Image 1: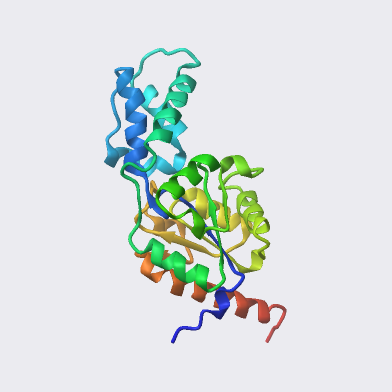
Image 2 (image 1 turned 90 degrees about the horizontal axis):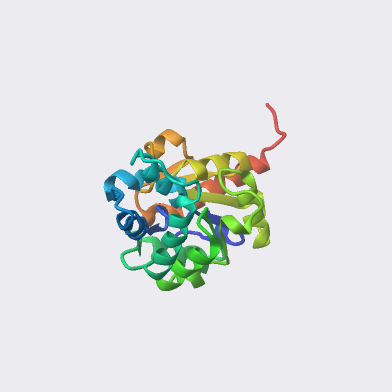
Length: 241
């Protein structure tokens, strides 16, 4: 029988889009709603999916730029406001948690881990999405881009998330899918788990995670492995041959 003792009090930090939730269909649909209204070329899901970690604003500016047409400086901001209105109303039309997410979170939570969402998505939108998917109560806190002093890949996002739940950075793990997650974890000095099915411009393995996750059914064991390694490293710190 697996011993989950090491999970008690550990802080497990999760990216949202592309890690916990397949949200690309609704994000791209919302962007296309404003692009089509302006007679701009809509985004194809397969071409835009890898760039979602850059954010909706970047995708919108990219869509305008590729049209090669002169636009007022306020044009992108106006379209972005329309995007937010549409996306807020359709945030969970086709979004869904990845396979195995709910079961893995339930095990971690039952074992006493502190679960925190660390996302560059605004907090209100993140809460709305997780609420509509019936997942919000699984997390001890949700910190979006507006809830921290500096967003991923800055270490501050993760450090402030751990602090928000009374955790210890020495017993924290970041679970993500793309460069901002990897950068934040390395900057904060905490172990990194990356999923290989998220929104990354390059294969996740090239971001050198401590563990590459192909299915959430392996998440709990991955967390236990990294927490055990951290415990061993801590206990042997300062010991030389």
